[in-house]
Image (cartoon, rainbow, N blue to C red; front, side, top):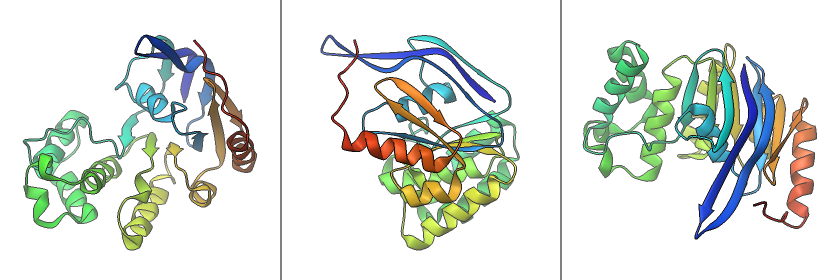
Length: 225
Protein backbone atom coordinates (compact mmCIF):
# COMPACT_ATOMS: atom_id res chain seq x y z
CA UNK A 1 0.00 0.00 0.00
CA UNK A 2 1.15 3.53 -0.81
CA UNK A 3 -0.59 6.34 1.04
CA UNK A 4 -0.33 10.04 0.21
CA UNK A 5 -1.09 12.32 3.14
CA UNK A 6 -1.64 16.01 2.46
CA UNK A 7 0.99 15.79 -0.28
CA UNK A 8 1.98 19.12 -1.80
CA UNK A 9 4.55 19.99 -4.46
CA UNK A 10 5.18 23.54 -5.64
CA UNK A 11 7.66 24.58 -8.31
CA UNK A 12 8.91 28.14 -8.63
CA UNK A 13 9.87 29.18 -12.16
CA UNK A 14 11.14 32.74 -12.54
CA UNK A 15 9.56 33.51 -9.19
CA UNK A 16 6.13 32.24 -10.26
CA UNK A 17 4.72 29.32 -8.18
CA UNK A 18 3.15 26.36 -9.97
CA UNK A 19 1.33 23.77 -7.85
CA UNK A 20 1.36 20.22 -9.26
CA UNK A 21 0.17 18.52 -6.05
CA UNK A 22 -2.20 20.45 -3.80
CA UNK A 23 -2.71 18.71 -0.44
CA UNK A 24 -3.41 15.32 -2.07
CA UNK A 25 -4.77 12.48 0.05
CA UNK A 26 -4.94 9.10 -1.71
CA UNK A 27 -4.20 5.40 -1.25
CA UNK A 28 -2.82 3.04 -3.91
CA UNK A 29 -3.69 -0.54 -2.83
CA UNK A 30 -1.14 -3.34 -2.95
CA UNK A 31 -1.37 -5.70 -5.92
CA UNK A 32 -3.36 -3.34 -8.16
CA UNK A 33 -2.21 -1.85 -11.47
CA UNK A 34 -3.30 1.81 -11.54
CA UNK A 35 -3.15 4.23 -14.48
CA UNK A 36 -1.97 7.74 -13.58
CA UNK A 37 -3.60 10.09 -16.09
CA UNK A 38 -3.25 13.82 -16.71
CA UNK A 39 -2.30 16.49 -19.21
CA UNK A 40 1.31 17.09 -20.22
CA UNK A 41 2.85 19.11 -17.42
CA UNK A 42 0.20 18.11 -14.88
CA UNK A 43 2.86 16.62 -12.60
CA UNK A 44 2.55 12.87 -13.25
CA UNK A 45 6.29 12.24 -13.46
CA UNK A 46 6.88 14.45 -10.42
CA UNK A 47 4.34 12.41 -8.46
CA UNK A 48 6.06 9.16 -9.46
CA UNK A 49 9.43 10.50 -8.37
CA UNK A 50 8.06 11.63 -5.02
CA UNK A 51 6.59 8.17 -4.45
CA UNK A 52 9.93 6.64 -5.44
CA UNK A 53 11.73 8.90 -2.99
CA UNK A 54 13.92 10.56 -5.64
CA UNK A 55 12.13 13.91 -5.30
CA UNK A 56 11.11 15.61 -2.07
CA UNK A 57 7.58 17.03 -1.67
CA UNK A 58 7.13 20.62 -0.56
CA UNK A 59 5.06 19.27 2.34
CA UNK A 60 3.04 16.23 3.34
CA UNK A 61 3.94 12.56 3.65
CA UNK A 62 4.18 9.40 1.57
CA UNK A 63 3.78 6.21 3.58
CA UNK A 64 4.33 2.77 2.09
CA UNK A 65 4.39 -0.90 2.92
CA UNK A 66 6.50 -3.12 0.71
CA UNK A 67 9.18 -2.37 -1.86
CA UNK A 68 8.82 0.28 -4.57
CA UNK A 69 10.84 0.51 -7.80
CA UNK A 70 12.41 3.67 -9.11
CA UNK A 71 10.39 5.15 -12.00
CA UNK A 72 10.91 2.51 -14.69
CA UNK A 73 12.50 4.15 -17.73
CA UNK A 74 14.04 6.94 -15.63
CA UNK A 75 17.80 6.64 -15.95
CA UNK A 76 18.83 9.80 -14.16
CA UNK A 77 20.63 7.93 -11.38
CA UNK A 78 22.88 5.91 -13.70
CA UNK A 79 26.56 6.89 -13.71
CA UNK A 80 27.68 8.13 -17.11
CA UNK A 81 31.26 6.87 -16.90
CA UNK A 82 30.27 3.33 -15.89
CA UNK A 83 29.26 0.77 -18.49
CA UNK A 84 25.72 -0.54 -18.64
CA UNK A 85 26.92 -3.74 -17.01
CA UNK A 86 28.71 -1.90 -14.20
CA UNK A 87 25.62 0.19 -13.52
CA UNK A 88 23.50 -2.96 -13.30
CA UNK A 89 25.95 -4.57 -10.87
CA UNK A 90 25.84 -1.43 -8.73
CA UNK A 91 22.03 -1.56 -8.66
CA UNK A 92 22.16 -5.24 -7.67
CA UNK A 93 24.35 -4.41 -4.69
CA UNK A 94 22.05 -1.57 -3.58
CA UNK A 95 18.95 -3.78 -3.68
CA UNK A 96 20.67 -6.89 -2.32
CA UNK A 97 20.03 -9.17 -5.31
CA UNK A 98 22.35 -11.55 -7.14
CA UNK A 99 24.47 -9.36 -9.44
CA UNK A 100 25.31 -12.10 -11.96
CA UNK A 101 21.64 -13.07 -12.31
CA UNK A 102 20.57 -9.44 -12.79
CA UNK A 103 23.32 -8.79 -15.35
CA UNK A 104 22.28 -11.90 -17.30
CA UNK A 105 18.62 -10.85 -17.30
CA UNK A 106 19.28 -7.24 -18.34
CA UNK A 107 21.80 -8.14 -21.04
CA UNK A 108 19.34 -10.55 -22.62
CA UNK A 109 16.31 -8.30 -22.21
CA UNK A 110 17.67 -4.86 -23.17
CA UNK A 111 19.26 -6.05 -26.45
CA UNK A 112 22.06 -3.50 -26.25
CA UNK A 113 24.73 -5.75 -27.79
CA UNK A 114 28.27 -4.43 -27.40
CA UNK A 115 26.92 -1.17 -25.93
CA UNK A 116 26.16 -3.03 -22.70
CA UNK A 117 29.92 -2.91 -22.07
CA UNK A 118 30.36 0.71 -23.12
CA UNK A 119 29.99 3.85 -20.94
CA UNK A 120 26.40 4.80 -20.19
CA UNK A 121 27.06 8.37 -21.39
CA UNK A 122 27.38 7.04 -24.95
CA UNK A 123 23.82 5.64 -24.93
CA UNK A 124 20.91 7.12 -26.84
CA UNK A 125 17.74 8.03 -24.91
CA UNK A 126 16.09 4.81 -26.07
CA UNK A 127 19.04 2.68 -24.98
CA UNK A 128 19.03 4.32 -21.56
CA UNK A 129 15.33 3.59 -21.11
CA UNK A 130 15.79 -0.02 -22.19
CA UNK A 131 18.62 -0.51 -19.69
CA UNK A 132 16.57 1.09 -16.89
CA UNK A 133 13.46 -0.94 -17.76
CA UNK A 134 15.45 -4.18 -17.86
CA UNK A 135 17.09 -3.46 -14.51
CA UNK A 136 13.70 -2.70 -12.95
CA UNK A 137 12.03 -5.81 -14.34
CA UNK A 138 14.98 -7.93 -13.20
CA UNK A 139 14.24 -7.10 -9.54
CA UNK A 140 11.04 -8.15 -7.82
CA UNK A 141 9.21 -5.17 -6.33
CA UNK A 142 5.82 -5.02 -4.64
CA UNK A 143 4.98 -1.90 -6.68
CA UNK A 144 6.47 -0.84 -10.00
CA UNK A 145 6.43 2.80 -11.07
CA UNK A 146 6.23 3.00 -14.87
CA UNK A 147 6.61 6.18 -16.95
CA UNK A 148 5.96 5.62 -20.69
CA UNK A 149 8.69 2.98 -20.95
CA UNK A 150 6.72 0.45 -22.99
CA UNK A 151 6.79 2.93 -25.91
CA UNK A 152 10.56 2.46 -26.25
CA UNK A 153 11.99 0.44 -29.13
CA UNK A 154 10.50 -1.28 -32.15
CA UNK A 155 7.22 -3.19 -32.21
CA UNK A 156 8.84 -6.50 -31.25
CA UNK A 157 10.60 -4.92 -28.27
CA UNK A 158 7.38 -3.25 -27.12
CA UNK A 159 5.58 -6.59 -27.23
CA UNK A 160 8.37 -8.19 -25.20
CA UNK A 161 8.36 -5.34 -22.68
CA UNK A 162 4.61 -5.62 -22.15
CA UNK A 163 4.83 -9.41 -21.76
CA UNK A 164 7.51 -9.11 -19.06
CA UNK A 165 5.54 -6.38 -17.32
CA UNK A 166 2.35 -8.46 -17.31
CA UNK A 167 4.25 -11.41 -15.86
CA UNK A 168 5.47 -9.20 -13.01
CA UNK A 169 1.92 -7.96 -12.41
CA UNK A 170 0.85 -11.48 -11.42
CA UNK A 171 2.55 -10.88 -8.08
CA UNK A 172 2.95 -7.11 -7.89
CA UNK A 173 1.12 -3.83 -8.40
CA UNK A 174 2.01 -0.77 -10.45
CA UNK A 175 1.38 2.91 -11.02
CA UNK A 176 1.56 3.50 -14.76
CA UNK A 177 1.89 6.72 -16.77
CA UNK A 178 1.19 6.37 -20.49
CA UNK A 179 -0.47 8.32 -23.30
CA UNK A 180 -1.67 5.03 -24.83
CA UNK A 181 -5.23 4.37 -23.72
CA UNK A 182 -5.27 0.87 -25.31
CA UNK A 183 -2.16 -0.04 -23.31
CA UNK A 184 -3.67 1.25 -20.06
CA UNK A 185 -6.85 -0.70 -20.73
CA UNK A 186 -4.79 -3.88 -21.14
CA UNK A 187 -2.58 -3.56 -18.08
CA UNK A 188 -4.52 -1.46 -15.53
CA UNK A 189 -7.62 -2.12 -13.46
CA UNK A 190 -8.07 1.28 -11.79
CA UNK A 191 -7.05 4.86 -12.53
CA UNK A 192 -6.24 8.20 -10.92
CA UNK A 193 -6.55 11.53 -12.75
CA UNK A 194 -4.22 14.40 -11.86
CA UNK A 195 -5.65 17.80 -12.80
CA UNK A 196 -4.95 21.21 -11.32
CA UNK A 197 -3.00 19.71 -8.43
CA UNK A 198 -5.87 17.42 -7.41
CA UNK A 199 -5.93 13.63 -7.75
CA UNK A 200 -9.26 11.88 -8.41
CA UNK A 201 -9.44 8.12 -7.87
CA UNK A 202 -11.54 5.77 -10.03
CA UNK A 203 -12.02 2.08 -9.18
CA UNK A 204 -12.61 1.33 -12.88
CA UNK A 205 -10.05 2.16 -15.57
CA UNK A 206 -12.80 3.10 -18.05
CA UNK A 207 -14.16 5.73 -15.68
CA UNK A 208 -10.67 7.16 -15.27
CA UNK A 209 -10.11 7.34 -19.02
CA UNK A 210 -13.51 9.01 -19.53
CA UNK A 211 -12.65 11.60 -16.87
CA UNK A 212 -9.22 12.25 -18.40
CA UNK A 213 -10.56 12.60 -21.94
CA UNK A 214 -13.20 15.08 -20.72
CA UNK A 215 -10.41 17.11 -19.11
CA UNK A 216 -8.46 17.08 -22.37
CA UNK A 217 -11.45 18.57 -24.22
CA UNK A 218 -11.89 21.30 -21.60
CA UNK A 219 -9.84 24.50 -21.26
CA UNK A 220 -6.70 24.35 -19.15
CA UNK A 221 -7.41 24.99 -15.46
CA UNK A 222 -6.08 28.19 -13.94
CA UNK A 223 -2.73 27.66 -12.27
CA UNK A 224 -2.81 27.61 -8.51
CA UNK A 225 -0.33 29.59 -6.54
